[in-house]
Amino acid sequence: MRKKSIGFDITKVIMAITAIAVVVMIGKGISVQPIIAANNAKAEKIAEDIAKENQRIEEIDKAIQSAGTDEYIEKIAREKLGMIKANEIVFIDISGQ
Image (cartoon, rainbow, N blue to C red; front, side, top):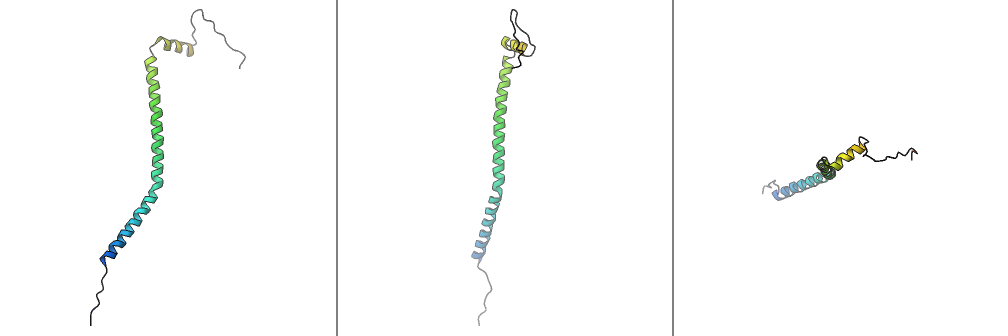
């Protein structure tokens, strides 16, 4: 009489473990997609903010460069101080329109 050996096929075990690992990885990949999309949206917003700030920096640089010119001084004197040139007539609209 022969003894039956109780054993298992190592190939089937490896395939089962591999299949379980693949399913787990796919599940993790799917669950991470909303986080990736949110981070991409944040990155786009930050890129837009950087572009706006760079434009603002350029405008400030231009203002700094023109700050010492006669035209700039005249503009500030007119707008902020209400000054006028000699022999200049100022008309004020009192109609409220």
